Structures are given as structure tokens and as C-alpha cells.
Amino acid sequence: MKMVRRKDNKGRVLQKGESQRKDGRYVYQYTDLQGTRKSIYAKNLSDLRKKKREAIRDLEDHIDTYGATITLNQLFDRYLSLKTNIRYSTRQNYTNMWNNNIKNTPLGNKQVGKIVKSDILKLYKNFSERGLKYSTICTFNGILVPAFDLALADDLIRKNPCIGCVKEFRKDDARERVALSRSQEREFVNYIGSSTIYAKHLPMIKVALKTGLRCGELIGLTWSDVDFDKEEINVNHQLVYRKVDGKYKLYAEAPKTKSGTRVIPMTKEVRRELLIQKQRQIMHGVTSKEIIDGYRGFCFTTKRRAPIMPSAVNNVLYNIVNSYNKTVKDCEERLPKISAHILRHTACTRMAESGMDVKVLQYIMGHNSINVTMEVYNHVSTERSREEMKKTENIRLII
Image 1 (cartoon, rainbow, N blue to C red):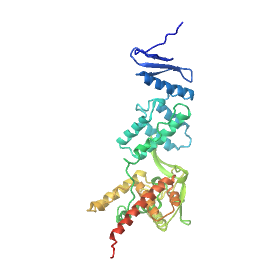
Image 2: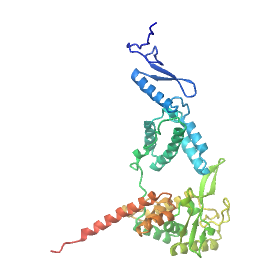
Image 3: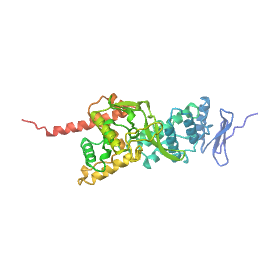
Image 4: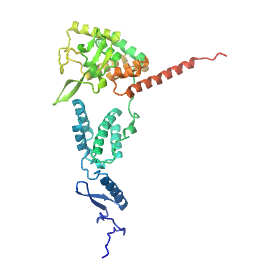
């Protein structure tokens, strides 16, 4: 008996597993790796067969793309639960970022097997349009890439849709961190020293400008970290302000990477400023008595003998700049916005300008990657070339 083959409404012969519904849509049914019947749908036959070929190829390679029902939110939870070499504060930060930006979106509830590169690009584009910094987009990419790598290792997807996506937003919409020029740094420091209001902050600011300490490292510095005899500063912890169990407070924690733990040689100026600060604490009776996770005797404190908050450091810098700019009539002579990170970037720039070996500078700054240090060196080289070229304008040919 001759077998009758099924056809679609256009008279085309349908292959095994293929069918056409009454509404005109095409369906391909197959059995996945777990023995469960699955269906693939398409509006036309050519699209159906394209999806069918992909499904068959995935089955042959033991990849369950269409059978994977895990959502992006579930993948994130799985990835984070399996990640062991991560600090508590970083874990909390990742969770908060995810909950605020992805969890309740269609993408967060989308199956990972159906997420494509354009979905990730659309996500990053949305972040950029909302004003999120390039560094924040990179942080999300640093979460999504290894999360999808996990899905790849579990044979849930064929390729990672995040690869190469962050390059589309490479610093075109990111504000460049600009160090203070030598004249700006000089005006800034001189103004603080001559101010009856802000002079008390001068030792802290000078130490930041001459060591390149991060804000958390600076406010977490204790007198036991300072060795005046060896003229060294031991950096092995930092203070962070975060929410735990519904309450915000300061916590001490180790540096994020091994390179963050380091010993910074003290210059004579840094040694002098730290001695001034120590004497000032003793004279005014504001020696720190607060203990944070075993650390005590903090170098920079408030009137209440407590360590300075990270936000307070930036507020002080903002107020100083605002006060200085009110005394300047010429807009070009005004100081730019200065943060604790700008002080660190300025310190790094000055060291690079001095010709310090790049590996030594990387160590002192605690950079995990040499590329970060090289970015500063490259910027310094560009500025130097401009200055040198300007000198040629004054050269006159004698004939």
C-alpha cells in the first residue's frame, strides 16, 4: 500500500515531524535529550526547517537549547551560588544591581536558550541611554559573560551571546577621568593650606595625592599601618559603607585582589603630613577609639573620633572646590570637580610623569591589570608630545 505524505496548504510535502496548523503556522515535534516531547513553531516552512536543523544539530552535540527552560534570572542565581571566590560586599552589590536593572524585565524572565546577541546589545544600549557609566556596563558584562559560560558548559546554549557586546560602547559615551594639572594641584593645595575652615583636611588630602590610596584605603588607614622608622605604609584592608541586615555601617575588608595588598614607601612629605596629623589628634583629643572589625586607631577621623565616611571625603572635596571657585573671576582658572578618585588618578599621573617604572607604579597603585597603569602612561605621553610640539612654535630659523 502506497504511503500518503502530508502536505501544507501550498501543496508542499511535509517531512517527518512537521505539520501545519489551521491558523497556517508550522510545527516541528521532536523528543529532547530527557525524552520529553518538544515543539518548534514558525510562520513559514523555511523558518521552521532552519530551526529544525538547529535543533537536530544541538541534539547531536548533546546541547539542549530548545529544551532549556531556565530563565536568565535563574541562571544568575545559579552562577552566583556557585561562585566561591567572591567577597560578601561584591555579592551584595551584584544582587542589588541585578534586582534594580534586570530581574523584573522581560529579558530577566526570558529563557537563556532564546537569548541572542541583539538582546544583550539592546540591554547595554538601554543602560547607556539611562546614563549608566561605561564602567557599570562593564560590571554587568563581567557578570553575564561567565554566567552564560556556565550555561555553555552545561550544554544549554551553543554560544555565548555576550561576547563582544561591550565593545560597542567602548568609552564613546563614558566620561574620561582627568587628573589635575600641576598648576591646578598647586592652587588646590595652597588654598586648603590658607583656609581656616579646610586646613584641618590638608594632611589627608596630601597623603592621598602623594600615595594614590583608594578612598576606602585612605579612611581605613590606622597608625599601626604606618611605620615611621621604616618609612612605609602597609595597605592590607579598606573601609566600606554598606547595608547589612537592614542597617548601613562601616565594615573593614581585605582588598578586592591580591595586588591591592602592598607596602607603599613614604616620601618625606607624606611622613611629615602623617606626623602632623598624629600630633593634631593628640592635641585636640580626637584620637580614634572606635573598633571596626578588629581595626582601631584610625589616622583620619571626625570630631566624634569616628573614621570619616567615604561620602564625607567627597563632600569635603566638593565644598573646597566650590569655595575656591567663588574667589576666581576667570572661568578658565576655576577648578574642575574633584573626587577621591581624581586625587588617586592625579597621584598616579604625577608618578608616571616622573618617569617611574611602569611595573613599580602598578605595584604602588595596586592595579590588578598592567593595562590600567599603561592607560595613564599613554595619556601622559600624549600630553608631553603636545607640550614638546608647542615649544617648536617659538623656534625661529636664522638665515
